[in-house]
Length: 297
Image (cartoon, rainbow, N blue to C red; front, side, top):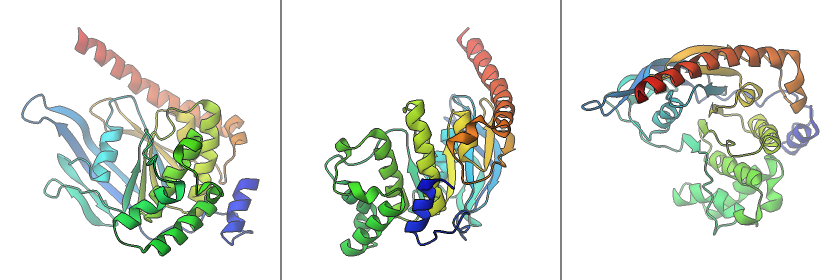
């Protein structure tokens, strides 16, 4: 167990606990034969086709694939930002999105995107408190107490509670954004390439911080990325999507033990998983490239 994770567990009152926080009772996603067609009466661009997967409550699922394969489209449908053209999505066995029922954003699903979304004129504490206060689901006192506790448990971020985003590194800003997403106690956390703009060293550090948060506040996570090492290091399973129209090509089970540290990247098991994943993704990337050349011709 790393010193950081030991510190987090101790702060939460579980110093001797080596395993993940208990699996939550809620947050199961069932995605069945989902399809999405943009401009169905005109160009009819099929972004996603016949996409099906089951994500158990508390699972960490990564989705990879070539650009334009429908990864972000699928996340946007789950989040309630877009509708679907066929199939259905259930959250805890209740309809979330169907062809008859357009999905709507809700506090049970929270998205963290590539670009920062902290309010620059608000302190870290006020940013984290914002959601419950604007939704009027907590008093100011309740929100402050929960925000400070969550910041403390997630890597000691309570130390910068009074700071403003511009005073923080980009990595710390990302951590605060994820804590803010957790503040509403969502069933599902959707992360769309949140570390894409970071350099390799900063990204590796953020991976460890994210896993600390996952250790403390276990939620169902759907993580979109182009980085294969990132997907393997973080997730329980990695789904590979085909080139457009996006569907499920294969699913890779990641059996690496938790907690995970950067030393794992040099292990034989990690390299074997990466080679297998790389082969699957490369095949689809090649098809996407060749199709693009034909479309331009």
